[in-house]
Length: 285
Image (cartoon, rainbow, N blue to C red):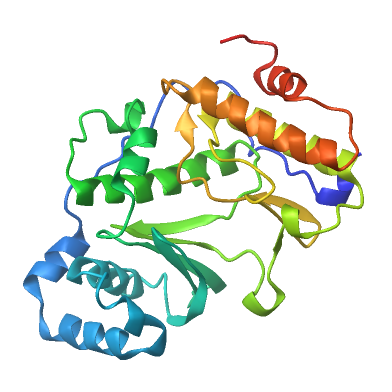
């Protein structure tokens, strides 16, 4: 029943028995910070070229030297070969099309100065990976970027179709570009869902796999699910929290309401409570 949307399988040996052990996420200075402090001739020339590029001119006031240094390091490491235009612009981050070693990629750049600090704090506080992170705004944004990378890796290992994470440097995340810009993937909210039953089964299974992997998306709706080449892809995992977060159950119930309400409007008989029970395996918080 799920072939239409290409339900993927967890990686071998993954998807079960993990959720209580968490990767260490380091938000100390990176090579990019050292490059920004040193400001050698090559970096200064690179920064000038990037600032002069049409797609970055509007960002000169919000991209600090360390952000340019992060991009410089990703270029040096071979993850980014050339930049295209912006795919999306938001209050917290811009996403750009770029060329990587194996083809088209997406580069997501979080703004240090413009990001919603308190919004990020609400999702980071209570996450065992970020205990004692403090109130330094720069470190909060760096933690958020690394958190998104780690969440994508964990989701992918659990068999959830998400953009493949490629690299992270400071406040810059490189990942798979799902759909070319001129043939962009469409959000579930933008399409006529011809087989809502199949789509619902795939979404709820991905929600359960995330939960079994110790994660709750925290902002899941028809706007964070996209369709491309017959696949349903879950996006925007920056805010995803661990099941140990003090608000994890509240976030999960909100996700269930959003998803169930959308598919109810598509004509399915479902409810947030039914979806919650499926995702958690009948556990009650």
